[in-house]
Image (tube, rainbow, N blue to C red):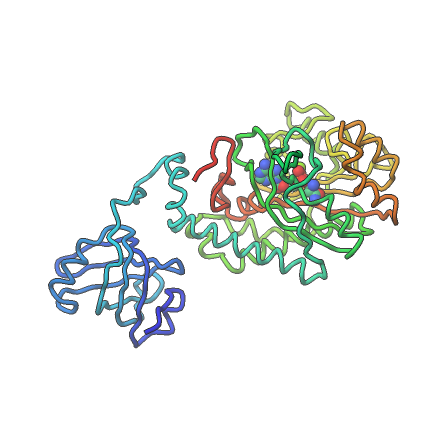
Length: 431
Ligand code: 4AD
Ligand code: MG
């Protein structure tokens, strides 16, 4: 008999099913055992009675421990009171392995204990849901771009260049040369945009940033669209369509578990509709000043400033035209005030902070050469990038969305570390 998956168990009502999984929970009441079986696709209550399965098998089953692996066979019945709506009347049970005493129990555990046991923690219902939403969001993201004629161009992880600044580069030996782990696929996507017009990359990104906040990972996933002949306004329209569509798909597919397992205020997510508010950096600085925040014009926002700004809005909002001095070398200067750049960040509401960074790319060869020198980058390494300004230079724009920060917002959770299967943090490289 084929092994049934719990998510499809409705198809077996009235008949027999054979399942393989792990013991999520077990309790006994006299000659009856109530087992919650978990198989990775769902959980289901299985009721085993001694009078049905026999004395010896019942005794063995009574000794089952949390997370033991088992095969269970039985009749599938509809039961409104059972969680999930179905129940198994057990006819047979085989133990695959009797688990040792499982370290994660239903009682409360500290953060570092759970992170040390991340390889097991993934089995819990909350972690399972968050990572299930992650997988779905990755799918929505790819579909969003694929359906709009974007070409997926994967960019390299080993690179010779800095993209977002030299202070956060991981360097590694590349057969005697120095290579860096990528901070962003953007520079390469500027090249592929000239070949395919609309492109995106979606892959792991590395930042050797000594930040120990709930928004920082050392290794995170970023999706980065790049569009030939798009300007700053065009890319803001793309970013808001993108964030609104992905958020609404997540709401549609996960409304009930978001509310029930993660206690997410889904009504606030439903407000994530276009258009998103747009304010300039200058306006943002004024808002902060009016609210009595300690903020100096010309500086980057701290996490607290982002939280204060987000209180003004009921949905994500753009902050555009940051001072050129605090942005990367590749930003196009604002023609109306060259001390500013045609850059944009999207800040999530509810204090979740920056989820997107992007802007219009510098177009002029001499300007870029000057910026590369000023930033102490090696012009030789950037020759291929400068070629894009020599051979059919084209105005273009793009952005990068940090997958884990976006998921933290969608799930309404406190820390990015729960949104990736094995988080890499400042002081954590294992498991
Ligand atoms: O603002 P960033 O550094 O922008 C870039 O890398 C551009 N080259 C992207 C582009 O225009 N193609 O990073 C973009 C986003 C941030 O808004 C944030 O969501 C996420 O990447 N991010 C991080 N997420 C988790 N941990 C970190 N340490 C992150 N650093 C950036
Ligand atoms: Mg940024």
